[in-house]
Length: 299
Image (cartoon, rainbow, N blue to C red; front, side, top):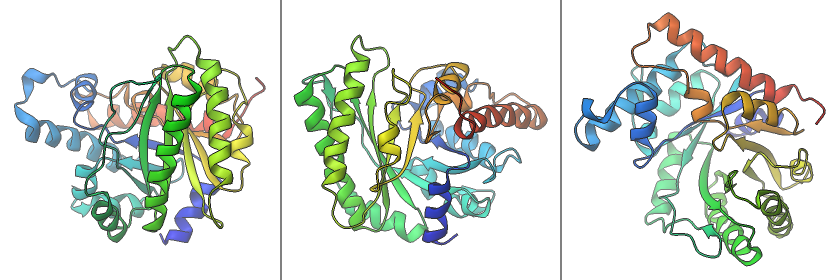
C-alpha cells in the first residue's frame, strides 16, 4: 500500500485498529493473560521473544485481515522483527493492514492530575527508520486522572508538540490523552479535554491532519465534533479497562469513533490453544469489535 492508500483506508474507517504495542512494563501482564506466567521465562530477551510469538500468531491468523482490521499499532521491537519470514511491516501491508508505531517511553509521575510522557531521546532517528520501513503513523500516550484544567492543557500541549515532530517526518500521529475511566470526575475531564483538543487542532498549520485515540466518553457522542474536525483523520477509542462487551456496547453509541483495543481484543487468546481454537477466538473478538466500530446505535 502507498501512503495515500493507507490514509484513505484509515479515513474510511471500515474496521478498527488492533493495539499490539504492549511494552516492557505491560508485557508480563499481557503474557499472563495469554497463559504464560513469569515463572516460565527468564529475562527481558525471552519475555520479548514470547510476546513476539503471540503477536506473530495473531498477525498470521486467517481471522486477522484488512477486511475488518484496518490498522495495527506495533511496539518498536515488533516493528524491527519478522512475521512468517517477512519484516513485520511488510507482513501487515500484505494483509491490507496499516502499520503504526508506539513511540512514547512511558509516563512521568502524576502532577496536576495528569501524567505526561517521559522524554523520548532519539525520536527523530526512530521516526526516520519507521518511515523507511513503511510505517504510516505513530501513537503516543499520556494519562488524565483528574479534571484539572491547567494539567490537561499542559498535557495536550505536550501531545501536539510531539505530533508536530511526527508530522515533520512524514508520518501521521495518533495523539492519545487517555482519561482514566475510574476517576471520580471522568465526565468533567472529558469536557476539558474536548475543549483543549479543539484549541490545539485549530492551531495546526496548513492542511496537516492527526488522529486521536480517546477513552470512550462518559457522555455518548461528546466527541462527535472531533470526528468532524478537518484536522482529524480519524478518532479511535481505547477500551481503558472495560471488558470487551462493555467497551463494544459503549463504543457503538459514539458516531465516528472506531476501536483501537488491546486487552479487549486479546482477552480470550491462550498460548495453549490449538490453531483452530485460537483462530476462532480471535475471529469472534474481531467480529464483535468490528461491529461496534461500524454499526452504531442510539445512545
